[in-house]
Image 1 (cartoon, rainbow, N blue to C red):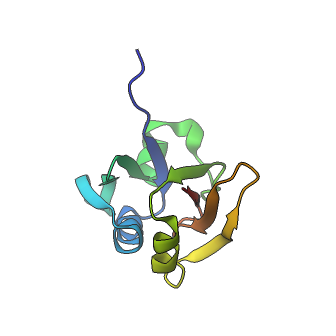
Image 2 (cartoon, rainbow, N blue to C red; image 1 turned 90 degrees about the vertical axis):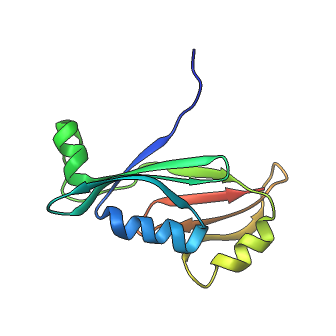
Length: 126
């Protein structure tokens, strides 16, 4: 039966997206697939027990034509749980665009949200 789920995010530029996740959130590149025209068309990133796949818009539309669009419009958020949320918040708040400041939720968690370089919202919670 089901074992894992990994988000495959459509991005304009895989190389720039890798830089965002590596430099700001400490992810590492596990694998990448080159593209003669764009540099990279795909990459898998990992940090602790989290993995993300990044795929170029062109590559994804070639694979799934129904995903064709003028521009990428995020329609979901990523919800990431972490330890040491206050430390992470202090580390990233001057480097990324904050979508929602640190706050305590009605269900008792500390959370904040950021935009990645493609406008995706990452909600980070403890």
